[in-house]
Amino acid sequence: MQSCAAGRLTRGRAPGPLGAALAAAAAPPHLPANRLTGLRLACNLFRHAPLRAWAASQRGALLRAFGGGGGGGGETKAARGAWASLLVDLALLYRSEVGCSSMGEAARATRATGLRQARPARVLAPL
Image 1 (spheres, rainbow, N blue to C red):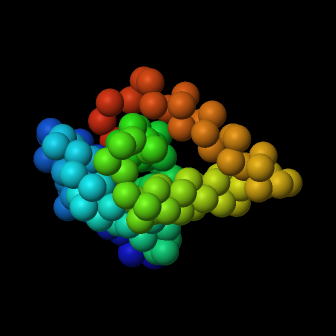
Image 2 (cartoon, helix red, strand yellow; image 1 turned 90 degrees about the horizontal axis):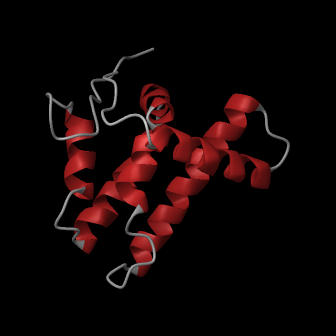
């Protein structure tokens, strides 16, 4: 299996190229095009196994980074769709990890896990 240098999802302490791109897309100023590009990049992480593993270990930071703008006045329809896709990807990932019996159970567990992880961790671990 290939390894990847996704790095951290923060701007400080030498983030990897993907982590830096995601952090930049989620950082102020919150422009709709930046948010949409970042959300699409985050969704594409789930297409490749090494990146999927990194996204799984950093799901709380992904939820923190892109979760604040959902439903705001400047939110585009495409960004809302990309945010929904990211949530589905995270729920499916969680379902495959823990073997949830239903999609609703996986979505609730992903949201709860993301909220628990969102508080303590400030920096994402490098891959």
